[in-house]
Image (spheres, rainbow, N blue to C red):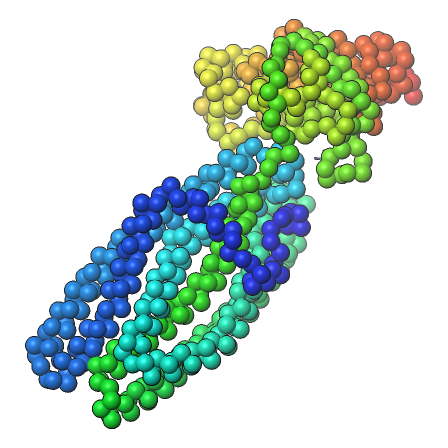
Length: 607
Ligand SMILES: Nc1ncnc2c1ncn2[C@@H]1O[C@H](COP(=O)(O)OP(=O)(O)OP(=O)(O)O)[C@@H](O)[C@H]1O
Ligand SMILES: [Mg+2]
């Protein structure tokens, strides 16, 4: 959530923000250098043609009006039409090329950021909200697209105009130019001051809008909880407050901006009038032609507008630098899971945890696993039982290398898991998670997710093995039925069977089942049980189960408590000697007794 996200703090003064992150973008522009060159040429060309209009004005006034010459007027007009045409052509090329570059670079950047994010360790997403990251990929890249697609070109064009106008002005009249040069910095002071405040406020404004979005997203995603607990009015108030805060900041910003505009306009026009006053006297005294003054005024207007645009674009540049910084951060986000191992991987080895220690980075003080020792014989089924929070799912995380051990060793055939190439190791395992995770798409897509080469026949066989065919057959479009985002259109038990079929289809050497039957009714559980028997035969299987009935036949059962294995044995061995197991068993079979009291149960009542 917002407090955990690494975005730049809103208090960041715009001054301290360098444009350095933008340099990274050059790497993205480089592959398109030919277009970049064409765009730059078009840019220079249009800036020059625009300035040459000043010459047209001079001719128009001096030869057309002053001499009352039709010929002079015609020449000036023809010249200006030609310039207008050239400007139009140049602008076409410039706009097309520059916008193309903007779109291309932001698309490339989006792609590269996403590609990198796919490889980052899952723990990263516990600290960084996925919604926030998504908004960076969309909003921040859009910002950069505008930057490259218009701001940079605007800046370059106006910088050129500014320099060009200044040169032409001094060529036209050096005295007036000097007056301008002294006057301009004076007008700049208030403009710069106000501009800084506007920028600080825009950053705050953006952050507050982002907060509004995050909050709304979370509420809408959990709409059922909101409605069932009748918190609509509370959520409405909170949202209204957030929106209000965003509005207040925006109000301050536009106020400052309005001031900025007013000051700039007044100072600019004041300067112009002053110039006309001095220049006008020179024209009257015959020291300067009317045409020169006209051209000069034209250049001054160009200069003023160029300057105003530049100062505006400067703010955009800084905003874009912020966006680039955040994106570059994501682009270079390293995975905590290093993939440098090159050990060759054998089949059917012993999986072993030796004095394993693991602490979640977000909870550095309480280890989730400590002195965890376990040997997993290949081809056998090992069950993990233990109270909630004991660390059962955590060992699965380590087995799939979503995290690496903080101490001790986790080995396969005596080689630490980290020494194998990551992809090869993960190819050996398949997980049916505690809460089944599906994607929007149809059933066939979801079952086939773990094996893109699977044929429709394979998919159906996997569904059959997971006892899912019966409900799939009842869906309107069978395997082509859409299941909604995260599979919301399926029941919990149906989702679980799809997840099971997905794992079956991957046909892994090591199968990890995290309460694979927890969401099933007794009948489906019975069938899934049969499916599992088939599936686990001769395959290394680790199964976490709360319901002991599902694991009575496991080759071994490890009892986990407080992050370590407290005992390991078969069902009857554990019943005879492990207190924790006796307690778990007695509670469950008592539950069963209360439902079917006539059933003769062998479980001892330890209570
Ligand atoms: N991502 C995480 N970040 C920090 N701590 C975590 C994280 N996931 C789990 N934990 C903590 O680690 C401990 C072990 O959690 P784990 O999920 O392994 O329990 P479990 O044995 O699977 O429990 P359950 O039977 O309820 O699923 C718990 O105390 C839990 O709060
Ligand atoms: Mg768990």
